Image 1 (cartoon, rainbow, N blue to C red):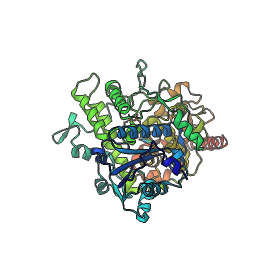
Image 2 (cartoon, rainbow, N blue to C red):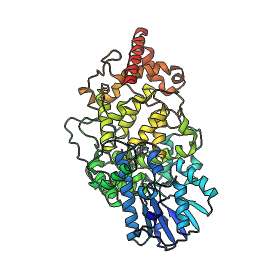
Image 3 (cartoon, rainbow, N blue to C red):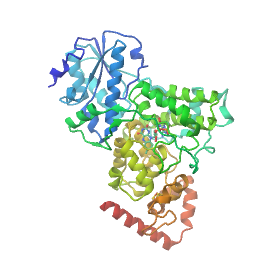
Image 4 (spheres, rainbow, N blue to C red):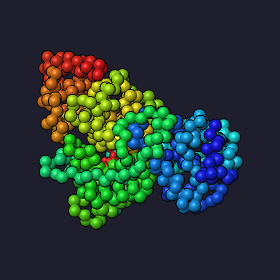
Length: 524
Ligand code: FAD
Ligand code: SF4
């Protein structure tokens, strides 16, 4: 038992009336909990073994969480709040979070325990089950982070219903009066995708990403001490923001340097860089160092400043991600959990190729996406969707394995946002609750949006044979395999019309190549 540690003189050991739990992804200084200082309230934030082991996380992700918790506790203590920060050494002996909370409640003789509703079903379920049997009253309140309250979310999203992001997004624009000129959208249109999504011209200078230099020696040592298995590259220092100030600097840097090209090159990929014009704020947002409203406001503000290159297409393209996609994904998650975590309509049962964990592959596009994921815990949306996700979908990998990989590897991966993006948008495992058709493509899409194919050992123009681009082989094979289901989807007509024109001997050669590819991958 670690009581010795819990009565550590560096910690607040006095009795308290209310114990307030802050989870590692609830580091929001603006939450109403912190609007006044009350000596009756003792706040706690803790590293827990259960949170490090439910999936194999990237080492940078865990370190970032631990450091962000350190800073948060320190800052709130400096503001006068009673705040205890527990590390793995303190908590490792406790079976789980409820056991730890019960211990603390007894130790501090508290009357009530309060927590903010977790964003993850797993934790929400654990806490609500425990709350019912706890010896003290336990109260849950909103995290106050998102645009939509819990009630508004449940009123809009229904279980098992296919919702469409565009429809939801327009409603959100109106409801929150974002980029609106009266009842009409600013710029006269809701969507500027046509102007956006270009590939990089040869001459473009890619910006150097703003990186931080956070010391990770202590968190990494704790991970090692507690035998926590991790994935990814252990860096010298942590480049990700772990304080509100760092998160705000990253946002400011995005507005000043990257926003002018954000929408335009949102879907572009290259061997020449990993961060490109993306904001890289998802981690800061998801642990609540940044508030979505502040982010949207900061970006919309740029439009009024007439910064060179910043036009409605760039700003709208960004606002759609936060006000639209992020809130939409959360709605899908909560309407459909826990069943969503078992969805697999395509009955995919293949194994995730080993090279997802090593980055060792001859496919140039995959190599870039995987190696930067391992090195920085980051890939941008199109790499996640149209490269790594496209490949597992075409290959027919079991969505449980795909989920575990995405949930572990990315700095910003928290289940509520990772799962609907992975199972829904990327793997079509939910049968169309998120996406109206599977996001599949041959190598031709990757060739159009990147420079990867030029250096690749595979030939993007071939559909079968040893040198054929694996995306091509698997794409046509996917259409063959799922033809009956896909025929029912009007949005798949165009893709299938090309398949229909294909000679039967070519289809056979593709099927043979696909089998060979699968066998090769299974043995690697
Ligand atoms: P930018 O490209 O700069 O976009 C700005 C912000 O918009 C992001 O920070 C994010 O908060 C929001 N956003 C954009 N697209 C989405 C989306 N589809 N869903 C929710 N928010 C969005 N995002 C996560 O935050 N966590 C995840 O675990 C995650 N897993 C994903 C898995 C797959 C298979 C796919 C296809 C997408 C996933 N996304 C996830 C969405 C998106 O890829 C990331 O939010 C984005 O790449 C983060 O990088 P950024 O901050 O540079 O984003
Ligand atoms: Fe990727 Fe195929 Fe292009 Fe190679 S040829 S980079 S595998 S799309």
